[in-house]
Length: 338
Image (cartoon, rainbow, N blue to C red; front, side):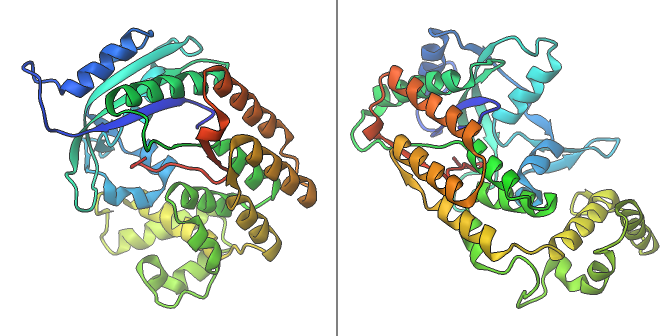
């Protein structure tokens, strides 16, 4: 679960509608969460695209429905509620004050073989400083809602903490570009494949930006500001101002990022540590012990994040969860289709 915000989400089928036009299941969820203090809320369907691209990487663009306003700012139809809710909270003037919010409505994202528009319920707990307790509280409410609707048989609870991976990456002293690339790959569920493949060079077929290897090679050691200006000048000379919704500035930034990616390599030792870390799973206490053992053997300081992980486990037990029913994973992450 994310240390910075607490979110519980359920996708809803567009099947049975109540007479007032609200999905009946969604209405029950909103009412249930209202009884424990979650205020029914909403955010605009049209959202700035930049936060989604920044947090999830450019690869998420193909999943979004993107447009732009009169001033050229990229906008998208909301693909989920958590980021828009967090942005609205930050602009509300009440940052630091607890806000428990429930959202219900249509979201929009490309999904192979599925409808790109569907209804989603999302519960967001913002502003709490007792983050581990907030995680446990929200998970308990979501678990209760799900079991009330469908029963507990066959239900599996998977938990994790992205802060573990973030701290591991930090202690490995990787370059910012490589660290971001690994973090995005974790969220997209492709980090194992990435670790098995070379992270620099050796690409069998030139696709996308790789077709411009000469330009990329020239940019590898260039000053970032000068490199971006150079790419923008090239685009200007070619008469290109925007491609596929991307401005010349966006394209220049992507060229520079790709050049940096190609100049980075992951050593065998950190790669082995990452592979071992990602293989750790089991009950929460087992995961904690295994990650502590790895940190001690590798000389990495993960003590603070592990203490918070254990604290959350204690709160989960206090909320009635039996640890044997929880499947924890050191490499747990979620993407847009969580």
